[in-house]
Every structure is written in structure tokens, then in C-alpha cells.
Image (cartoon, rainbow, N blue to C red; front, side, top):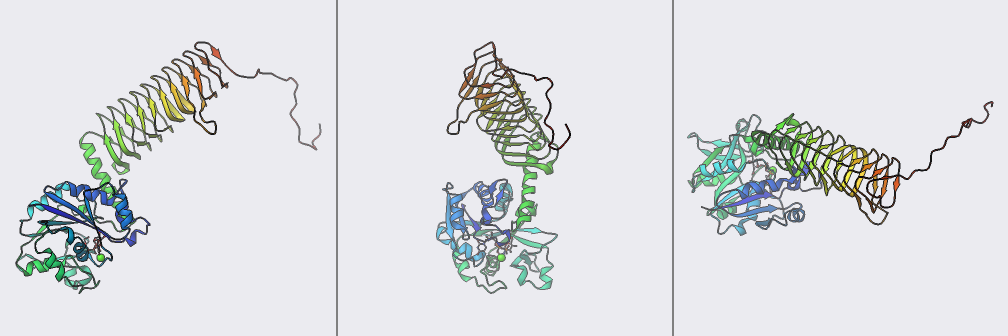
Length: 459
Ligand code: UD1
Ligand code: CA
């Protein structure tokens, strides 16, 4: 039998105290709803994906404009979870079974859902339950003398005795589609919140003799909802831990699992080592034996074997060749390719730079829009002056060049292979290969020179 998934995501999320609609709040840099949709898409027999939106609907639709497999339903007024599902009915006439998920419950795993679906007979109503140490805020599962589920009672509507029940409704439901429209039409807002409760369907099913099948989630944390900033952070940590555990199983070494953040996708070879507080974003690829130092941030980079990234370096949109060494405190910007065994040292910024194998820029440099050959030495404080205030210009440096410290290369400019540039030079014209080039005013010394004195002091 096919399954339609309806994700409820119309709520305001008042407690987030944010201008961003709740389901757009980021988890590992992707909206909460994106995680739920990804899980839903993995369901076998999925017929159609529906999302019920309300608060911030235009922003949500806009954020998911490329998700053309989603059928959006707008709930004009948030009158409860039952009313929310009713909003989606227009898209459910040829549905067979309907699975209800929540846009703010992002940790649910595809395998868990598959187990749940497999556990619910086709004619039955399935619900995910959990035994919680603190059931506060959840609907309680009420069972009859025969042990069968009779109803779900929202906490606010519970008697003191019912409130003692530790078994709760985690919210995820699998419903037969045939009676759905009829059931939803029967809901009454006769409860403490004056809302149409989806959970009242359980009582209706029981009354009609439709089997109700509870499925106790082995790990109820998977059903954690995000309602405020603290829960968002808690869910983020759980998510990070889960991701890292999978990476560790594939051999990644990480100094401190509590201080590792992956907001994207990481591929890696053997014996890679990650120090604390590293942040990895976008698509990152590490070869074998790569070491990432404390506090480094890697965004969309490809790093070859045996590279060492020293602490507090920021690398973005770049390729780093085998056995290169970067940092500490280096900034590698998009379009940069660092050759094998090259070194980029502290306080060096490189933007759109091709740096040849074995070349070094170890201290305090700005290299931008430059193509630098192999075996080049860039002295401390060298700057490629690539910007004239209007346009960017290129610097080309041949193999085996030595650029003395504190040299400015006024682009566009070329430096021939093997050239040596004396320290402190301002290079404005092409430097021929081989020889020494320097632009430096001659040094002079004035003997017996006296420093000025403060006025009023005796001579
Ligand atoms: C609901 C369940 C409760 C369960 C809990 C699990 C009901 C009546 N209660 O309670 O038994 O223990 O989830 O977390 O279903 N939403 C809409 N439109 C609405 C109302 C809600 O789209 O009109 C969406 C919200 O955006 C949210 C979800 O439905 O994502 C749940 O709504 P919420 O009001 O938070 O339900 P709970 O009170 O937590
Ligand atoms: Ca509520």
C-alpha cells in the first residue's frame, strides 16, 4: 500500500522569539523542515509529500522553491493538529495510508520510520509512543483493562491520575486514508485549548473497532521537538553526535566529540585527525592522514593526503595539495589551489591564487589573483597589489623566484623564473628572469645628528 506523508508545519513557534519561521530554523545549517523532508523521501511506497504551512508560509515556500515534489497546503488559522490535517484533505483523495510527521521534529530516522510502518497492520491506526522520565507537555496514552490503547489525552485535559502515565504520544501517526475525512469532520474543539485535536482520532478508531497499534520508539529522543532556542541547541548537539558516530565508525579520529561540527558532507581517507572546535561546512574532502588543527573552519575544500591544517585557519572554496602545510591563522579564500608540499603560514591571506609545489609564503602576506610557480619563496609581508580602486589585476611569478620581504607587486605584473627581488621593493614593471631586481632608495647615514628636544629643556 502506498503512503502519503503529511508534515504539519503551520505553527508559529512563538517561543523561538525569532523573525524566522520555526521550520526554517537551522539544524546543521539546513532548515528543520529540510531534515524532515529528507527522512520522508526515504519512505518506501511514498506516493505524495504534503506540507501544511501557515505562519511565514511565503518564506517557507520560497525556501523550498526547488522541492517540486512537495504539495503545499495553507492552514489559514492554527486551530489545532486535527484542523491542520484537514487542510491537506484536498490532496489525499487517492491516498491509501497517511503518515503524519512534524516540521519541528527533525531527528527521526528513516530506519525508525520504516520499522514503525512495518509494525502497523494495513487496516490499523499506528501511533509512535515513548516512555519518558519526564512526560511533561505530551499527550498521555490511556490504555484499557485489556492493555489496548483507548485514547490519547492532552496533558491539560488529564486528570491528576492520568497525568502520572509515563507513556506518551510522540505525535507520529499512521492512519488509514478511507475513514479520514469522516473522522476529521467529527472532531470537536471540546478541550482545554479549544482546538481540533488530531489525537482524538484514536478514540474514534477504537469506537469503530479499528485496531490501534502503538509502536514504542526505542529511542524517544528521535521524536524531540524544537520549541525554543535551548531545544534547538540540544537537538543540534544530538544531531552532531549522531553524525560523528557514523564518521567514527568509518575511521575518523576526533579529539572531542562534543566540540565537532559538521554542517554539510565530509568524505575522508584513512587516519585523519580532527582537533577540538573544528567546523566543517558544505562539501569537504580529506585524503589520508590529514590533520586539522583546533578551531579551523573548512568550507567546500578538497584536501589531499598528509596535509596539515594548523589551528585557527579559515579555508573556503580551495584545493590543497598533498603534504602542504597551512596556518596557523591562515585565510584561504575561494579559487585558491595550493600545490603539493607548499606552505602558507600565519596571517597569510590567499585569494584566487595558484601556488606551485613546494612554494612558501610563511608570514604576513596578501596574495590575490596570482599565479605563482614552483619552489618560490615569498618573504614576510609581501603584498600583491591587485586592485587599482576600479579593477583587479593579475600577478604572475615564475618558478624558483625569491621575493624579498615587504615587497609590493603592483599588478598587472610578471616576474620571470629564477628572479630575486630585493626586500622592500615596489615592483611596477616586469622583472626579468634570473637576475636581481630591487627598487630601493640608497641608504644614507648622517653622523652627529641630534634628536629634537622637547621645548623648554636646557640644551
Ligand atoms: C501534540 C500532540 C500531543 C503529543 C505532542 C508531541 C495533539 C493535539 N497533541 O501536542 O499528544 O504528545 O504533539 O510533540 O496533536 N500545527 C499545525 N497547525 C495547528 C497546530 C499545530 O500545523 O493548527 C503543527 C505545529 O506547527 C507543530 C505540530 O503541529 O509542528 C504540533 O503542534 P503543537 O501545538 O506543538 O502540539 P503539541 O501541543 O505539542
Ligand atoms: Ca498545542
